[in-house]
Length: 256
Image 1: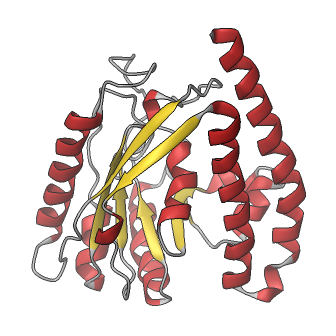
Image 2: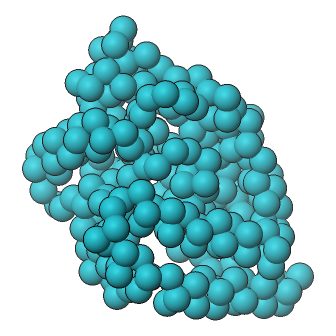
């Protein structure tokens, strides 16, 4: 079993690298064509990698709650962060979106340069006050441009069976802009763990919650409701995959 999983994971890794080397330069070259065109190109890469995961690694996903995504308005996505998988899947499930990420990622050759063309909010995680101001400033601009903003409120990937401290930026951004908050829970880390090479076959469970009306609540109430909904869902979908916790605690602090 482990040899088979290793082989399949290696094939997926090679496919991911090759597709990045092929589409990355195309995405960079498409910069003058505008965000919509660049995002469409990037989405091809995303969907290819999700297809490759399913075809080669046997890693599928099942989504409940797609009807909860508002069709006419952008908003803030507060999502559980266990794996690299959700950074792919969210782009396939939601309208055009941007991520908040550490700025060092944009220095990675090809992949980072291509990611930069999608206009993420790249922050210095060491400067917490400045990072918060940037999230609010740039996040408001992206929302006004009609893009969704993804925030991982625990600030880093958290191992299955664990819970990080939820940050406040998502609720503050939503409260300031009046945009809805959509909470997302999943158990991807039980099949593709943090910093793990092996991707195990299975069905990742994704739950998309009802939008939270940010105009009627304080930022603290928004965060509290999102956290409660996510963790309630995690209690029902956790414990299925090979990487299911408890695992060693994360040592990366929450900066979000």
